[in-house]
Length: 257
Image 1: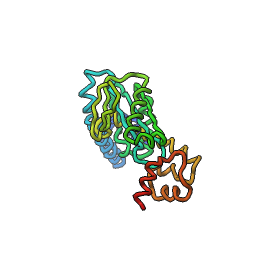
Image 2 (image 1 turned 45 degrees about the horizontal axis):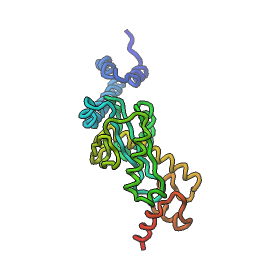
Image 3 (image 1 turned 30 degrees about the vertical axis):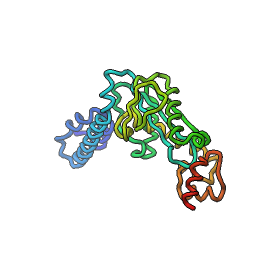
Image 4 (image 1 turned 180 degrees about the vertical axis):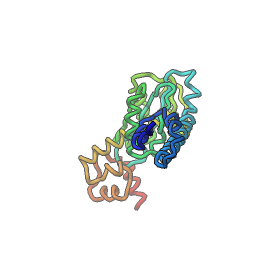
């Protein structure tokens, strides 16, 4: 019987998905060096996949703890507490029970491309997503911590499904009657909070990129409102915009003096 071409085996391995172990076993006795090289590569991919599945299982510690008692577990995270410009954005995400979406992590640990891909997947698979956003004027008025709480409350209110329990990244949100579980570095310890961190980050990044089109001098598309040297230089050269946090900039410039 004529052996399959190496090119065809390569395509089979590429398209194998969950059947990859079976496909590897099918060709393990093929002595051709090209086939063996493909199988070595496939085994490494399989090892990485198994390691990622194990990491996700560890990331489900809190979900596994509460899923039997609660129907809708909601992860909450925010992004944008530190920038000189733009809003603070919070996201609340309810994932399906038993969700084991691979590669979810603290958004800061992911590349921009991976965040974008995961954000789309989360939006497709989530039971509900709520976004909350508090702008610079309100931040200046009530301070960034209170503005963060306000954004988180908005995110919860904007969910189409009412959560039974909240897994929060580090904080306990005032004025919320739903049971809360604050988790230090929660975006790296809970798949629900990790998902919320990704959606919050992508949402805010897109908004800052839109601001950059209107105010290109400040480089918002790259600095996202954070206090880079170029951003601070632009403030000195062009002044403040309506999206700058005056309390933050005032404090920064006072420190420099």
